[in-house]
Length: 141
Image 1 (cartoon, rainbow, N blue to C red):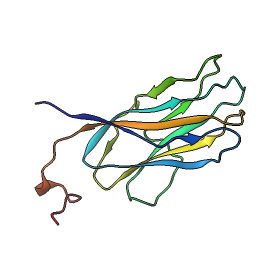
Image 2 (tube, rainbow, N blue to C red):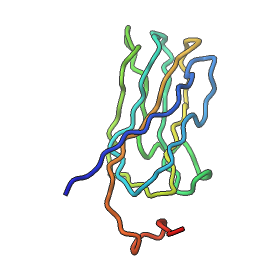
Image 3 (cartoon, helix red, strand yellow):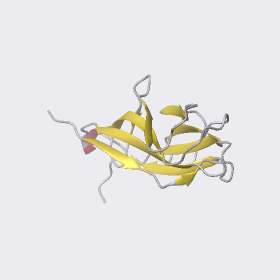
């Protein structure tokens, strides 16, 4: 059987000292899936000692719940001389499944010391085949 893998890319946000911490991108889960990878595309150059940190949280109830749990992963910009254009990713260390109606939230928890740091968070999901008869979150309209 063939499984579908799909990536979702969030909007560009500022993770620099001019930005703000908190939820930056919300990924609504369209189907039951396994989180294969979380990632951040870094679009700016920074060699500042204070690096941005992005956590990826699973929210079982869309629009509510605790954040900062980083069930799906945490990505920290490495200290490097050239970080622009880099694709940083993390594969969850344990199996993380999400269902339709849930959300994955990308949170900036630490701002970079550079004034502007444009990043684009994203998630990669692998579809898990499901049947409406055994999935209470799948409701016919």
